[in-house]
Length: 169
Image (cartoon, rainbow, N blue to C red; front, top):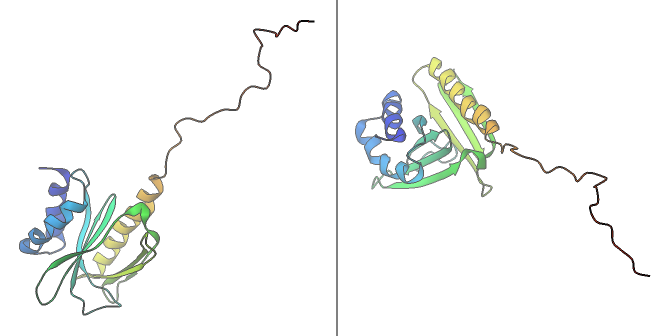
């Protein structure tokens, strides 16, 4: 069993997702996420600006954010968002323990601002979710910057010349 499978099922169970729901979304997630990528979070979410569009399932790994949508009538699965974390800009989230929810917003590489509302059962879970998002977007993305392995130094000012040109006169 690969890393994704080992971490996805426990994360789905922790989120309170039914096994059927997790199994139904698993093939879509598997196409988007590498087998060595560990799951940080799997949760149901909604879109505050489009509440009647169906049910969304959000998957957050160390490298990717994937959101699927299930239509209300025919229950068809559609891929809504599939992007690497480093391709997202202006990522913000607002925990609200009074309403038991966290609103996550990010601008995708195509310039579209995506907003998702994640509801929790208890206020304590809001702060756990806040810590997970902080770890994923602030700690991980910052460390994903390219490392400098070697630099090209400037040539020394005075190079020793082995051969002198001879001028025939």
